[in-house]
Each structure stands twice: as C-alpha cells, then as structure tokens.
Image 1 (tube, rainbow, N blue to C red):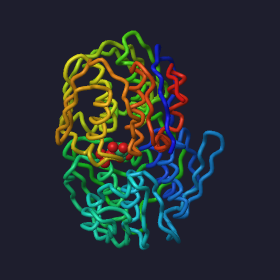
Image 2 (image 1 turned 180 degrees about the horizontal axis):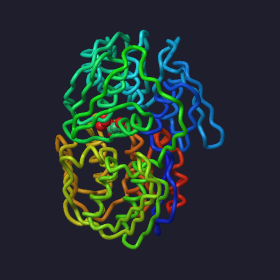
Image 3 (image 1 turned 120 degrees about the vertical axis):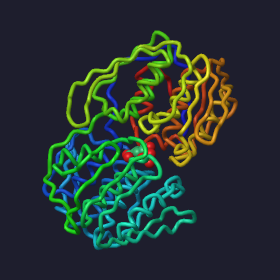
Image 4 (image 1 turned 90 degrees about the vertical axis):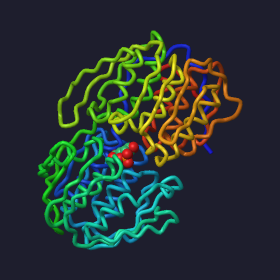
Length: 435
Ligand code: S3P
C-alpha cells in the first residue's frame, strides 16, 4: 500500500497552477460523448475519476485521444451503443450518478460498478427520481448501493424537490430530463454547484432558472442535438483549496494560484478564510461561463469561525481542510449542517475528527459537523495516519503535517490520484518535503 512521509515545512508558498476541475471534466466528457462531431477540450483532468468517466463514455461509443494537453472527444451524436461489460466507474460518485441520469432514457441496459469506497455510497437518492421518470434502477448492493443496473425506458418529465442539497442528484435528474417527454423541474433546498447548468448554456441547451428551480423541456428519446465545441476546463478550486488553506494559516506566507475556476458556487472557502483573518484577493482573468482567475493569499494567525447553512454546499469538499485551518486557528471553529460529509468517499466527519485528535487537537464530533478548538500545539502523531482511501482526507492531513514538529506518515495515499495526481510534487514545490 502506498504511503507518504511528510516533513515539517519551515517556509511555504510560491506560485502554481492546479490541474483541471474534476466536476467540470466529468460533465464535459459526458456531453462531448453525446455531441455530434469532435470536441477539443483544454485542461481536462487526467486524474482517475475523470479518466474513469471518459472510459465509460468510450465504452458507450465515443472515442477520445489526448494530443498534448488537448483532449479530442468524438461524440456519438446521441447514438450510444450498449456496452458488453459493466462500466467500472472507479472512485467516482459524480461519474456514476450523472451517467445513470444520462442512460435512464436510452433503450439499453447498463450496469455500473466501482471501487470499495464507491460500493458503499448511497444511490437510492438517484433511483427515486429516475424511477419516478419511468426508468428501472436495480441496486444490487446490500444497502441501496452499487452495482447498479440502469434499465433505460421512455421517460416523462417530473417536478422533483431534492431532499438533500446535492449537485450530483440535481445533475442526474437534469441529464435524464434531456431524454424525457415534457418538462423536468428540479427544486434545490440550497444552491449547489451549477456546472451542469452552465455547460448546458454553453452548449445551447435551453434551461430556465428561477431562483432554486431549474427547468428544461425534454427532447424525448432522441435527445438533444448538441454540436461539438472547443471547451476549456478551469483549474480545480477544490485542489487549490489545500494550498490556499495551508498558506492562509501560516503568518507571513504568500501564494499565487493561477488559472483556477472561480465559480461563486465553489469558492465559499475564501469567504470563510477571510472571516478567519487571512488576506485573500481574487482576479478574474477569463470571464467565461465558469470564470477563471488568480487567487492571491497572505497568511495570518487565523481565528475560529462558524460554518453552516447555505455556505455548506459551496465548500462541501473543502470541509476537511477547513477543519485543519480551524485546528491551526485561535479559538473555536464550528461546522454544522454538513451531515452529507458522512456519505462522501469516507465518513469525513469521523475521519477528520479522529486524525485531528492524533495531532493533539481538541475536536468534538456532532451528527452534522464538528467543533474544533484550535491553536493547540500540535503533537507528532505516534501512529501512521490512514486515509481510508479518501483523497481529500489524505491531502488535508498532508497540509496539517507540514505544521507539525516532526515527520508524519500517511498511509493509503494512492487515492490522491483520483483528483490530483501532481499533489505531492506540488507540495514539494511549495516548500514541503515528501518521502
Ligand atoms: C459534485 C458535487 C458534490 C461534491 C462532489 C462533486 C459534483 O457532491 O461533493 O465532490 O461534481 O456535482 P454532492 O452534490 O453529492 O453533494
């Protein structure tokens, strides 16, 4: 099993670009595979999640080739072929849930499966709306989990009020809605990331957004006519978040991240860190549907804060590293309304709390979050820290380890490749030492 030893960093900061956004890459892979013609995609993530989704689209009849940093995807024009074998979605919850939506209205039967972590993740949340629309979704795992067989069928539009604030469920229903007869409406309890809606707009797929209600008119079984495009994937803000938090919590440190996605539904981490006392500025350099820009960070002694409510979906993947920032801050940081963290690649509440305690931090776990009492002098964990196969847990721990007084060993670190294969190299570039 791969492991990494992180040494304390005496200085930290510099300048870098992060790899392509995971959410955007996967959505583009799906829609380029649906389009007619060859799309040219710049900045596509080569992390395992995006590649699993791309491979699935190739198994459905698209073809894909990298030429330098441009990915060329030749789409099916809407004519997917039934794959001979189950599609292995690896670790990707986004790929699985969105693809189930895309397949629900096609006259074919497709089985989706994945790795150990994906096999534990809840899929009932997409089965319910897709079956209301007319598809049959068999979840053959023990607890409403993968493997999942999608029996595509003629769909009709529905109005669906999401029981949880989930961009994945919203996107799944909207993708299914493309192939339904009539209107599909999704109502969100809180605003979640809107990359699907933005991409539909870029691809001229008509969509109506009225506050938290998103509607589209389905095209029926033949689906929408989408023309291939040139598309750019912004740098992944959730990958940049590790460096932004690592710098923000270190007085005097400075960091510049360029080419990063600054969609406001993704960047609530910046508001929280500013509230905690960091100096952060942003500059938009490409104002496309998903704005791209530069983030400048000046570190400071942080102070604790409260994080909850509408902010949560817009920093959901950043909560482990925000808890790390809370551990390094003076005072108390409270995270609430984040029960969804328990059903991510791992139970991120339990995993984060357990690991912060190993550094001597006072953490109390709650059903929907945690309370972190910061500024304790960190101790060097006596035992290896196990990532639980969760990339964001491994990377958050690596950030905290740079603040410890001695080397820290993190095990099961191969999972980092799902979203950020260059992470360890970048950690070293910014001042960390990794063995
Ligand atoms: C994602 C949405 C979020 C996020 C995940 C990616 C997406 O999940 O945690 O990493 O690409 O739509 P939920 O929408 O299930 O909260």
